[in-house]
Image (cartoon, rainbow, N blue to C red):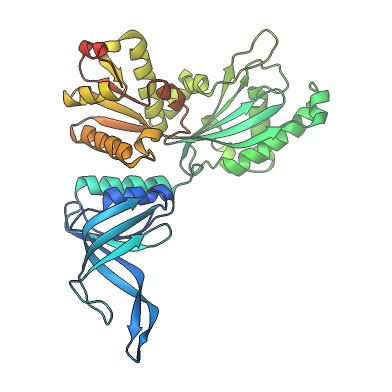
Length: 388
């Protein structure tokens, strides 16, 4: 969602002009707009011309509706806002009831008598998530160097995006130990790196792969090539940030094949130190804490809808972890249920983290039904309950 204009302060009256850019933005609007708000938007109405009562034409109007109810339609990704018109014009009388349809790429004004903390947070989350693409929201770039290919991953708040895959040429395959053939491959990786990694946004870069420094395609060798090329081309953005480019080795089997595991790389101590202050670091660190407790201290965690809801009723949730599949579920009632849970946990002083379907930790969270919680105090009795 894009915030076009803003004129309000916390706990005061004010107005914003916003526009939905994606289907899920319309759902966010459903949660942002409440009864009593004023929505102003352009619409069209069929009117009869005074000169010919039998002829009707559509005219463009600007309506100011004080909201009495709103309906979300998931199939069309639209929000129908019903309310009383506040300002009369030549076609619509003040006080009459009308409906505005809010949809993607249709700007409108939203006025509230009071912009409370929940509304401000909802607006901030919505505009932050959608004003930034995955590349511009990336905290970390991971370059994977393998025998015949390389990948560049961008990781940001809740998102893991593989933005580039580079295949080694057949020439490189047939001359693996040739320095010149390695350079051909590395130049292709270098070009992709320059295209996708912006040090104005990306905080750190990890180069992962076979940790054998003698290997022609090792991550350490590529790091040296990267810095050398940057120096030749006078690319100060890379040279000045070389301390933020680290190498992490991955495990290889007896046949020399390396199995790349992004979770393993992110759990490396050097990498965790790089991202410890970022949202990504918080999400990974929190899930690791949850997983360790599941294995070693199960009374301090719970997972599954019934267990989590019971823990919340006892005000026991310290941190809620929930997958996007539940939080943005296509079933409206399911979505309402989990949006309400997240909001209630936060209002009770707890924290809530929503894990995107593209997040590196989401597959493991899915094994725990997609919703889990770290508890403030042990609840051993929860383990005896049958979950849904």
